[in-house]
Length: 359
Image (cartoon, rainbow, N blue to C red; front, side, top):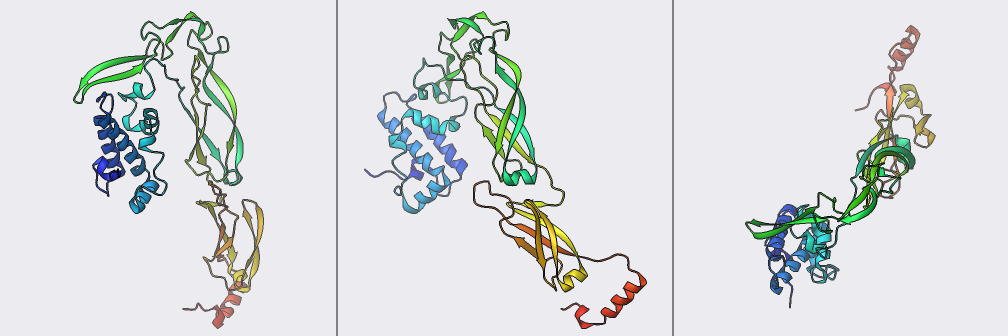
């Protein structure tokens, strides 16, 4: 049996925007979800079919191939029909949001407390162009929540089952909505999702399992990072007590403005002043680069504004596509004060046709 057109599955036009496709999928998912249609195989198939359509149409590259070739060319096989509910939730959890009424089912059971994760931390790291060009390893001191060393993050000794959630770690509530009765789950406020209560509190952390502390981290910054780019180091954020996962450390890059270099993507621009006599007769100049000094030839007759290029002497591309170029703009410098003798010599030279500007 031939598959339905993905646009028809979601009920959108072929030129639908990404936001329209997302809204259409959410509508279908809410309508055909098995929690609302228990035992209805038809609804379940439509639910999976919608997930398959959304996976293709929400991905610009897959959508382009689908529009050109249809369902073939590697688009099938890892979508809808091969998905279970866990797959769908893990891929499209952002569609439902943090208050997903079906989250419990997707997690594979109502008696399994979810693994909690500590909050992320964000720091700013300032880098020079020279550091960005080569990449660098930076040591940073981070103030954050760390596990209590007295109780190893457990908050104390001995545990009792939480009486509020009965060890599940979540509180489930049923409420009536325009779509019918919905079950919502939230983290148990008593045990913070662990399902257990510490019997004897630790004096070091007062039963919290965490304390404030500092950690010195060595952060590897790859070459070519961009200003305001964010890097993530997994597990180096705030600690989560009682067996939870630590959050991530988010590193925001701040590029320090260079004294005389200007960055343009992977290229570096530099302006160099040359006297009009030197550009008239030709000369060599020494220019600074990210790799040290370089000698450049300036041909006779070079005009102001001409750009000389040092290929491969710019910034390394952050995605590994080689290095940009170093571009030197020649500015013809004109003296501001002349002696009487110098002025006389120049006035004589100005009578020559070679010193008259060409149209």
